[in-house]
Image 1 (cartoon, helix red, strand yellow):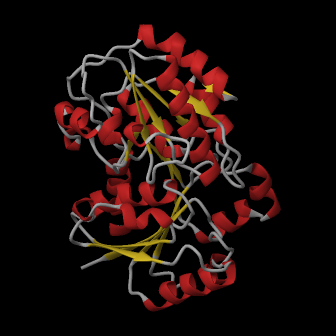
Image 2 (tube, helix red, strand yellow):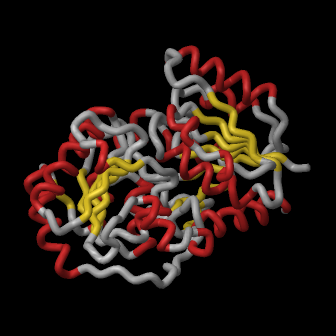
Amino acid sequence: MTTWLIYGLGGGWGHLTRSLALARVAAHHYDIILLTNSPYAAHIPPALIPRTCQIQTIAPNLSADATRQQVLYYLQTLHYQCLIIDTFPRGLGGELASFLPSLSEQISRVLIHRDLNPDYVQSKAIRPFVQQYYSQILIPGEGDRVPLADLPQVQHTAPWLIRSAAELPDPAMARSLLRLEAPSQPTVVVCAAGEPHEQHQLGELATHLAMTFPQVTVRCLAPVCPLTCPPNLWVVHYPAIDLLQVANVVVGGAGYNTVAECQALGLPLVAFAFPRLYDRQAERANRSGYWVEHPAAAISMVRRLLPATSRADARPAYLNGAVQANAIIREYTSI
């Protein structure tokens, strides 16, 4: 059976979730190896991983050099016919710069081009490298403002989501998972992902929101309970999109997954643009429509949005770009 190797390295949820979104669709047709060093890989429920998908985890606490060596070991020893690289054309640690020139031309190379800092693109000569070593580029719902959008091998899809609309749990189940004692009350979900200090900040914000809006149910969705968040407000569940569908307002960072999931569900996202080395969260926060820069502004925005929002139990309808991407890559690799 043909094997796809998906390179999903990166420290947070973003690369892992986007890669798994594609893997879950492609696993109906191929064997999948997903390479990740995300500390959150252990939080993925086994039921979410297809039988034909193997998650190969590199310890997140390794040094940069040790990580590069581990990546190269897997790339050189595993057997695959299609190599799919998420976000970093030269690799997270630059290891692909020396590896791709020696990779057999019989192996298809696909780049998933999420937005990148133009300074990185310029300083590392990303454009000529991609033109030479990638024959296909997919842009997963980031539009045509990303740095390489004008290259001829580019194809666009809708944002990639880990669940298609038909896979979402029943809204009653989502409310149960969120522990909504009064389902008729408006609900604000704070997505506390990102760096530890950002989770701390968002946990504290969830506490303030609960005190400011006593007639609103506030929940803080996080992999571990932030020290600043009372345990009764905390919920742990992956993937977040399962629960967001019953929210009235979402608060969180402007990372790829949070923005894409809220857009798919038609939810207002009160978004912070957290600083990143390669990603430009400010670009997404601006597109989300409700960009805030400090907690007081977030509370004010939630106050403004709540009266204008409503929830419906009808199943959302949206296009999952991961399904589109799977079809594009399958057609490309069959030529």
